[in-house]
Image (tube, rainbow over all chains, first blue to last red; front, top):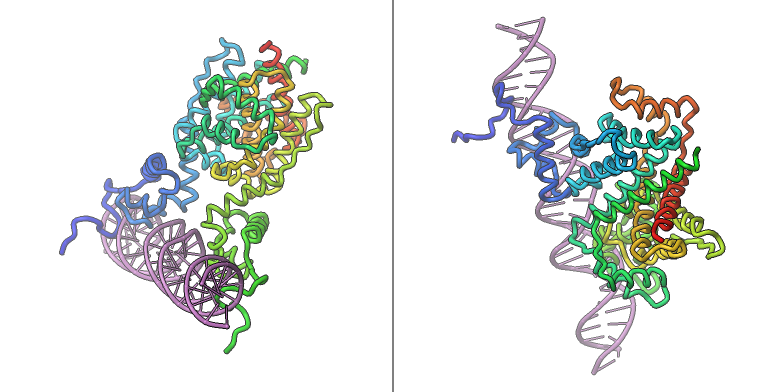
Length: 231
Length: 231
DNA sequence: CTCCTTTTCCATACGCTGTATGTTTATGTA
DNA sequence: TACATAAACATACAGCGTATGGAAAAGGAG
């Protein structure tokens, strides 16, 4: 019996089935479609119609696949950078929005991106430039620029973490929070109960977009205050 | 041959070897000492000198063990809450510091705590009360309190994420960042290069404590500005 | 007391994982 | 033409979470 497929041995020139890029593309698709847990070396090999061990000729191990995926997220990150014609606050916010959007583009990958420090390459380091540009224009010292940029990035990371976690389990914040707070033992967290109650009364229409924007406003106002005081 | 240990069947009264609490305590020790990957059901059972399957009589599966660990972190969280005698800014910062400290207490668990939404119980929800208290005193609207508290928590989460990631691989930020930035292609990220260069010249003594404090300052100043504008 | 259900342990086993090792075949270079 | 290298496949191993079932003590019901 002459089986048509799966010849063993090296493929003819131009018939290579694999490449680092092709593997990562397939992996990204699996993660996007079915979640991070669905990504196994065997599953990945199957979608590429290849033996699992073949993958190891292009990537040293599974951790490298993960790191490669994290890098893809950053590669897709493109800052608009409107230039210095807009106020620095707007420049800063635009950079933050672009970063958040890149993290949102692959929610199943967010945790990986945010936690895998081994994926921090030059590609990633360079992505902070727009924050430094904007903060420089705000009149901050070198140290203040450094610390403020870190603060912004930390906020975005925390926000993205919450957004991604909620995203993949169809968890509706508003009603959940409301019922949860209402069920609390009396007198346990009075301010929380009152505030959430008021929000519920006026229809707590929480969405992540406005939450992110209000965070950016707090941060830019805070940085402006620090800049004023710093002079 | 009558082997002394490992009798099968139910233990005599008062000789139970396991309990949910004992299991979680042992699990926490493993995670603290050897990292999250070292925690397997078999390993956990071994340290408790028990058959792996015995664990399943006290916890339904491994995910429940993880969630239980995350809960332990929040259980250890105690806010000092100096009361209303200090400015609301200080009250807010104290709450944030306490939360950060709780997350730092078990760095190997930080990622789990921050990403496992299934561990969000009443215990956790109540922990936001101090933020609400402080923000209420700042004169914010219900919606502003809600959004500002989220922003603070997001910042702490992002910060803790970075801190935990760096912690467990003896990665020294300052020299790493310096050499990395110096090795960048010329003209690639001019502001970043200049700022980090200046910091390197004056001895970039970065530590997480001061980074966290400067973040808190930016946030409280920003919230104060929003409060002023809100009137 | 006896009978019976429930609880808490142990033993075995299954399907899955990442990957080490070795073989086959084609390529590119000497 | 030889030969090292590269890219595929095949087999196999240790370790994982956990389903299933059995043994023995506990504890309540008659």
